Length: 331
Image (cartoon, rainbow, N blue to C red; front, side):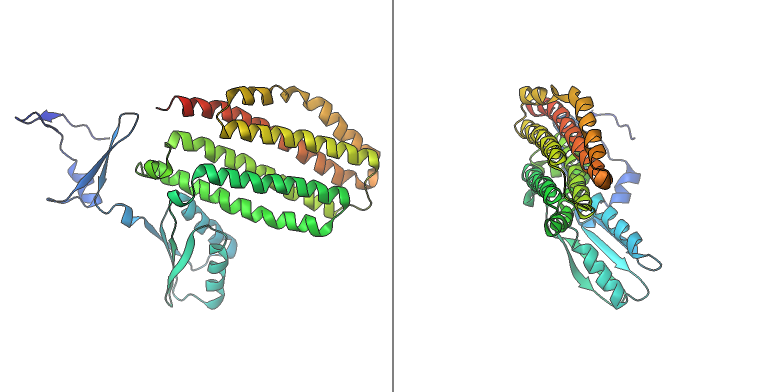
């Protein structure tokens, strides 16, 4: 941290000097311009000319497996880089195909340049293109449909529907990665707050809700996997318990997300009022597995996933309480 004394000109203008070491490192020169951006909490951000245009990184390709390359590209995508240059002594055809497939899993990333030794990825969207409120609602819509269809597939031993739900999990993952990227951009660049239409502090809650919904979607996929493992149809009593727990967990999730979207603390507290019923539901889950030993493993997975979905709903309700304070009393 640098410390400077505030000085005043004869005309009453306040001024401070910029640290030479910092100025040289970021390219500030005599006669150049900097942007001064005040934040709601009081600090003033100094942004050198062309800083955003330098938002690029280089990723060496040589020696990386597909898994490693996927992790590295996604990490840089989430970090907020606009340009990712993947380079090697020579980029082989199978490596180019691998990069293309990874790119397809990321929203707004395109291959805009290729040479024998490089593949350059560009992010072609900004925060304004995907408002957080709309993205969260889209994640919720996909997740809720996955949960409903997964339970239907389990109850009806519908293999085709179960596999379809598992594939839809990728759609949720892509949107959640986008929200994580946007949050990183807000942390790195205060100017992004104006584009996002909210502060970093407020966006944190959207990022956290997206994470909770992603876990629910994962459990939708897990229930669908259990459907593929059923050896026989479910007994009527077991099916009724699965339906009942699904409806209860679903209601918690729907009401919690509504409380978050509407910044409704009364609704959030109403949802949290049912949090103490877990012991009763856990007992029902154990009884269901015991009633049908040949399907006990699959039944246990489904009941556990529905219980966890309920808990994620309660987590979102708690986030809604915190977010309402930030919404109604912004810094």
